[in-house]
Image (cartoon, rainbow, N blue to C red; front, side, top):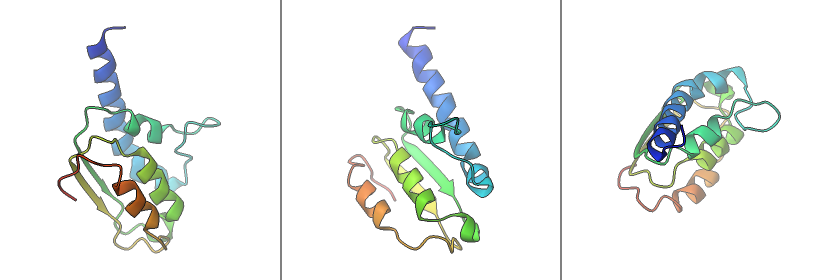
Length: 113
């Protein structure tokens, strides 16, 4: 289990599960950090170092998705992404995308947004 390939596969699987669970976790108001027993989705996605493409769709979440949720997404984005697709249509709790603009600066490999 110490082989580097096992670690990469484990990180990739954790990232897949994080992406799959993210929307439902936000809808339930779940703590996404790895602090105090929260669901460590931020860490799992951020550590998925082989991920190149990411799609997260929060369309229609109303006030359930807000500025703090966007901050969680931004702080989790793996730095090697080449393609990023995020949808926030109908997210009335989102009042600022300034955090998103700041996090784009560290995604140097990004070619498609």
